Every structure is written in C-alpha cells, then in structure tokens.
Length: 96
Image: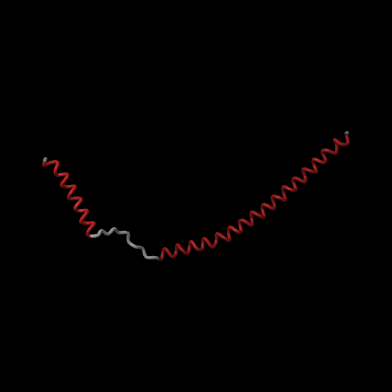
C-alpha cells in the first residue's frame, strides 16, 4: 500500500509534465497560425491601400463643379408671386 502511495505522486508529476509540454506545443502551433494570418492580412491589405490611394489621387484630379443653386425663370416667378401673396395677406389685417 505504501509503495502505491509513493508511486502516485510520480505519476501525477509525469502527467503534469506531459500536459505542460502539450500546452507549449499547442501555443507554438497557435503562434505559427497567427503569423500566417498576419501575413495573409498584409497581402490583402496592401493592394486595397494601393487602390484606395490611386482612387483618391484620381478624384483629386477631377475638376470641381461649383455648387451654386440656379433658379429657372419659372421658379423665380413663383417665388415672387408667393412673396406678393404673403405680403397682401399680411396687409389685409390692417385694412379690415
């Protein structure tokens, strides 16, 4: 019985060493996977950045259209007509 008790800590220690070794191996594997993913990200990101910069340069080279509002004669006529109607409705309160 006593021999079995002395053997048990040795087995537990051996199992713990194996678990530590497995954990370290798994960590190394995850590190390699992470490095591969980072490299893939760099390979995808670089062309995207190049395309984006090229588009920004091309858009900067385009002539800018002025953002002025241009009314047609008909719109001006309606605007002044509405102003006149408003003015006349306002003045009627003093006439009555």
